Amino acid sequence: MWQRLGAFIFGGRPAQHLPAHVAAEIHRRQADAEILISWLQLLLIVFFIVLYAVSPKTSGGTLFRPVPFVLGAYLVVALIRLILSHRRWLPRGLLIASVILDIGLLMALLWSFHVQYAQPAPFYLKAPTLLYVFLFIALRALRFEPTYVLIAGLAAAVGWLGLVWYAIDEATIGGPTATITRDYVHYLTSNTVLIGAEIDKVLTILLVTAVLALVLVRARRLLIASVADATLARDLTRFVAPEVAGHIASADRPIAPGDGEVKVATVMFCDIAGFSGIAERLAPSAVMMMLNEYFAAMAEVVDRAGGVIAQFQGDAMLITFNAARPNRDHAASALAAALALQDVVETRTFGPGLKLPTRCGINTGEILTGAVGAPDRLYFTVYGDVVNIAARLEQLNKSHGTSVLATAETLREAGRPIPARAIGEVAVRGRRAPVTLFAVEAGAPPALPLPPPTAPS
Image (cartoon, rainbow, N blue to C red; front, side, top):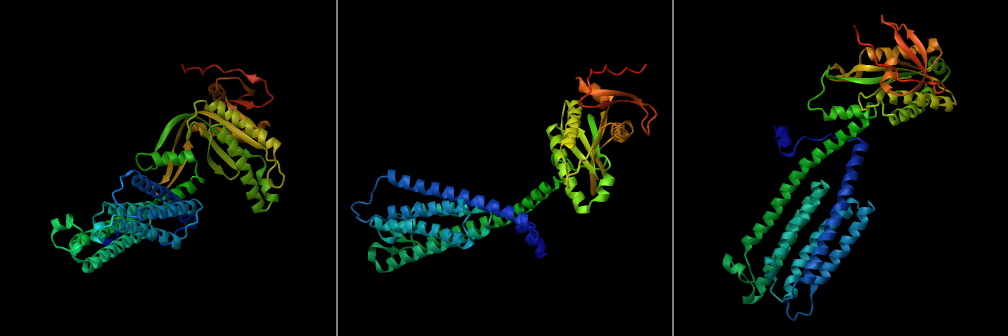
């Protein structure tokens, strides 16, 4: 029961142990908040100084005016804290001391009023400047740490009680000009102390502090959960395409198995020729290093061309154009990417200085892009005959001595001359109807745009 009550009041309890990178992200955000707090406090003290400078001076012939000295000290403290916050050098002890010093300077400013205006001490108890204490307490909330709000609120309550005690002490020894009263009207119209009114002020400070601290406990738990989720999501986007992650995040409802969308897109399969033999000669760590270099180079080319690597399958890649990421010129982009990939693998070496010749198969048509799997474990991929043909074309490169094979549908969709050599109609495993193929080669004469497909009779 107590756990449920605590969760209801304070919110869900965060994880007992935060990963180091999550804790570092929260610390960074708090440091940024401290910079904002420092700037706001500096602006506040500048406002105090300007207000004091332009307001008429009604202190008569008082020679000693402590208000400018207190304001000057406040300005120095605000500037020092601003510099330290920008340098990220505000350890916990120093920060606590600065919070107490903020409240202490405000109380010193209030105390100085009766000296500057040559009035009994109860005079400062009616100063509206006390209201600024709530602003200083609220500023601490920007850091999302209830500890500093509590310190500011307790320091304000203790500071005000000290001022009340000083005023009462003077009322006790000050004679008829400074007395304690129980008359509210007399309290408001004279330099007297009304104990109940001062207790109300202290209670108000404490209650506002308590409410803000409670809000911050709940907000901090939400912040921790939010940062943890955001960090997890950012890490997971390294395992899935960012476009897929964005689609999942922006969905109106949770993605369910079978959810998908039919699109006209271009699909490209790429595979390293002779990879098994290469991997056999290398240590597993060397294979991993080589593949990482290879995939990084391929991903850069694909991203530049407007494609998305939907899957890594061993040494192979399934790349889509106009599926996860919109691309109106998807066929031409895929063909350009294939030629760029060939240029990379022909001019670069990977791992221990190895060439990695790469075969590609490209096809265009209607595909289904969506989620498959169990309700608690989904996989985002593409389906359809177009995808299967692209995979078969990648394998057919070996039979035809080519590196990039594309269908007539892809060249037709590209709508522009493509450097390609006609292969002709080829039977593809798993299909009855033959597929018209072209070998896309940088040195080949441009193939003219193909006529539209003949409508079935």
